[in-house]
Length: 315
Image (cartoon, rainbow, N blue to C red):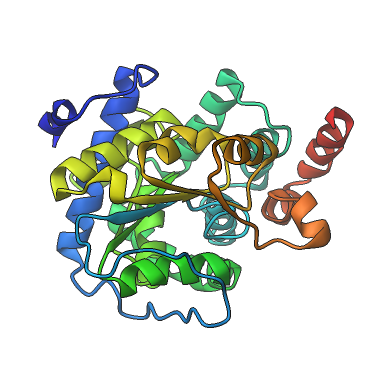
């Protein structure tokens, strides 16, 4: 997979680590689909109650759809829900949960992508899984999906994904969440597969290091680019869906970009470029995007209230 990077031109904003992360995500995603051929075991969704796009073109197998996960497919942040499940199973202590929740809340609510905070959050997550077997986390992830995630899927976004599946196209999650978590969610929704952050493992045991960097921003675009090269997709015929301005590199890569439950910056950008928008939030929920998931963990940890207050002062 490492050789795929030069097959298509790259954006100048992508760093070497972004390229490595993207190519690792594409390789891991393709491997997971090969290992799990029955990827639609319970993935049925109806589209009748929700608006669907006036495409995809039926039978166009050179087109695919790429969906961000947090606040696009799922309400809130998947890493919070996964963290709650691990905390319940005593993978880490209350103090560690408080630190992790605060770091994530700062990023999600204050809208600050400070490199030091992001590094700390990444290190916290990696320290939690270090020394555990990949198979163990995958098994637990299945349980956590049923406990905390299954009821948080946006029906409207799922209907959009199903429209692509019904047209015979591949549908991939593309997320900064761990690829193992993303793969579980994709499989349970009946999607083709998932591209996510790849944590290094040796002999099936996590080392506490990443391959490249988190699949965030430009790295997502690199992952989509690498997968498209491997699968023979025509990116001009592909679609991408996201709620965040951080995913503009990925959205700009395809011919059919969608802003789903968009943040303020993405909404402005989408309107300026006449991209299609979908918003499945209503009323107060729309104004408080991202808060429910953070609050769920923060209530346990006691750190999110301060983050929300900071966010409000900055408005």
